[in-house]
Length: 173
Image (cartoon, rainbow, N blue to C red; front, side, top):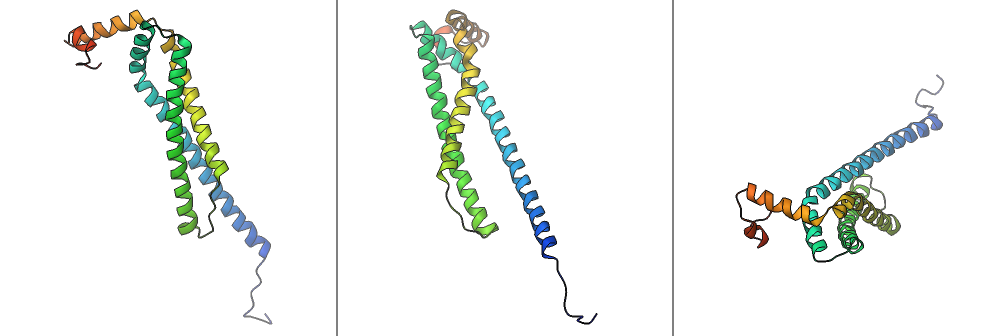
């Protein structure tokens, strides 16, 4: 009461409050990152499943022409690796751009590029796509080519197309 214009602020309480807010922001960002990662994995699995029928046909044709399973697996893994590399580079560039924008305009703090994290993310994306792709193509490599090619002709007939039109590429199934 002697000094009515002076306020006492406990700095420890202020630091604890700021630390609690920062921890909540970190938790929210981590949750969103995990959600994006899981969503990306589901989208990846869906896109691989959508192209599976085409891979079955390509594998049947290559097996008919004499390709061995090991060669087919190498071809598919190279394709998945390239797909993962492109996805990883795009994701890394987008992540770096968003972190730069958030650092500069939202938090107003200095930003530094971290190549280790970005290259690690690209490598992890390549590995994830290759593993998911390999798992999804195990049954593709074990199918007999004659059964696959016959099923394609039967499907073409069911759709009203001639086997010759399918074979010549006029009709894509």
